[in-house]
Structures are given as C-alpha cells and as structure tokens.
Length: 230
Image (cartoon, rainbow, N blue to C red; front, side, top):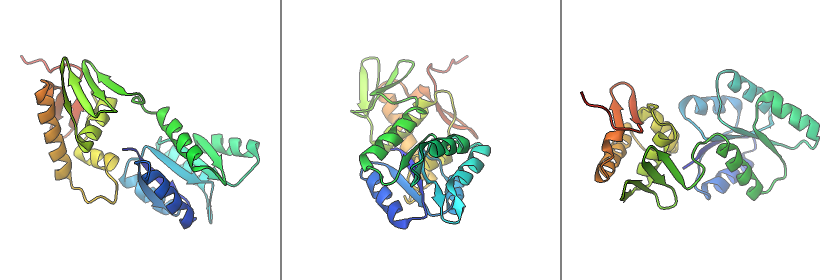
C-alpha cells in the first residue's frame, strides 16, 4: 500500500487530499508547514510527497531544495496556483520536483500524476514481480515457485513486495514499519516480526523459505538463490 505525505498550509485542502487518496487505498500523512514535514520525513519513509508551492510564510520550493540537498529522493508533485508555465517549469526544475499540478485540479488527474511519478521510481509496476524463479502476483496476492503457489494476507504481501523490489538488500523491522504502515497505526516491531514469521511459513509451503534470509544486526532480505551450505 503506497504511503504519501501531503504538505500544505490549507487544512481544508489537506483533508480533501487525505480522503481522496485514502479512498484509493493509500496511507496518508498530513503536515501543515515545513517544520512538521521535516519531522514526518525524519521518522517515516514515503512513496511520494504532494507539496504546496506556497506554504504561508515559507516557500515549498525552499523546503524541497533543502530536502534534496540532504539526500531526500522521494518523488514530489507540487501544487501551485500560478498559471505561468515557464515560471512553474523553472521552479519545478530548480527545486527538484518531479511534476506539478495547477489549482484548481481534478482529483482523477492528481491521482494519475502521483501514480506516474511513483511508477518511474518503482521496479514493480506490472502484475508480476520476479526474483529468480520466485514470482509475486499482484492481482491475486499470491507467491509461487515452480508449480506451487500460496495466497498471502495483506501485510505478508506488502513485506514480500518490498523485499522483492530490492533483492539482496537488507531491511530492518524498523524500516519496514516506517514504509509499510500508517504513522497512525498502532503497530509495534513485534507485529512486524510476526508478519515476517507468517510469511516465512507461507514460503516454506512452496519450498522457498530459504530465499528469505535473516542477518543479525542487518535485517531481512530476499535472494535469488538458496544459500550455499559448506
């Protein structure tokens, strides 16, 4: 489930966007100024950010420039009331935004633009994700290897999707919690580990549990091949 951050000093617009994207299956956090946005970004990982060009007493472009300079690479769509296309495009490139939408805007268009900028940065944008012979099928939320397959529950699927997007890369339980759960959800690290344990049991059914590796101090990862045992 994608997780986005909305940053705008207009509270009514923020809640409109929150409802719009939550109705489409997103996790949504809302920040009303640059300080709140930085606090969210320090604590959580996001798939995309929607940022207002003008944030009351500060500029959204200044916030984005600062974030980009510190290594923040989450795709960002800017909202603006400006109509001058040259000005918008210059500000877009200068600040490091990926796209912009002028106000007033269509909710359908905004969702499509967000999906587009996320798609450009995500390896899994089709119906299947493959690592070696392991196949994760999105529409049916199933994992298969060889001739066997098994269905996954929601967060089992989300955990495995994350690991299979970045094969060989370790993710801690903490990083999974920040990426895959809403910041409002009452979920602990023990809950995350419980989902990983259940996922491992599902993988065992199709003889793929050895592809989910655990390294003390590093976290969890999916590999394309079974580890070699001397």
